[in-house]
Length: 111
Length: 115
Image 1 (cartoon, rainbow over the protein chains, first blue to last red):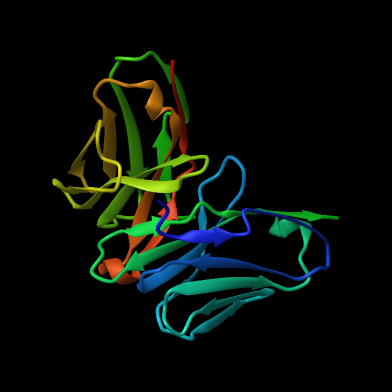
Image 2 (cartoon, chains in turn blue, green; image 1 turned 45 degrees about the vertical axis):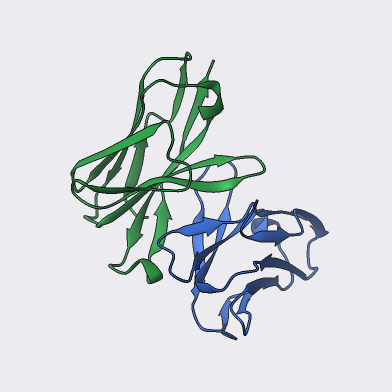
């Protein structure tokens, strides 16, 4: 059983389109992170969110943490081929001592 | 770049043989982690360390042991490799003293195949 569910699992879009990917759990997170991973490489941290309702922006990427701290979303505006990769969320649950990762959303941006 | 390397990068071994993977960091961070990544399961924590000789189990620790005799090195050992341990193994370091805010920086990975 996966503690974090990510959707969609796969996403293929044209360059210039917008997209949103989601990370959900039935439990409350203390902290949540988003990573991007390219083939043959390790994940790279994009952002950490800790406060319910928090919104963080990283250029064309917007990260939102749900008010109840059970979900998060990543929105990409005007996607570019360089955004192609596997997007992973990782959550630290209340009273937890480790981050649990979702299975990821594989994004392909077609030129 | 976080200054983290893994060796070897690729390894093929046979069932029943011992295997040791090495993670080396150059930044003197306290927390180090070993994960495995498999299709359909994402990244799963095997073991982690919060200091020299201080280690703890993660989600999928059965069949694995770790050692940390120096701050910079974290070793993962498969005592008797099985085909179910075929995977990509990632080491990570944690920047920060508090797990709540630890930001993990990953190495390039080791692809292990057990025949």
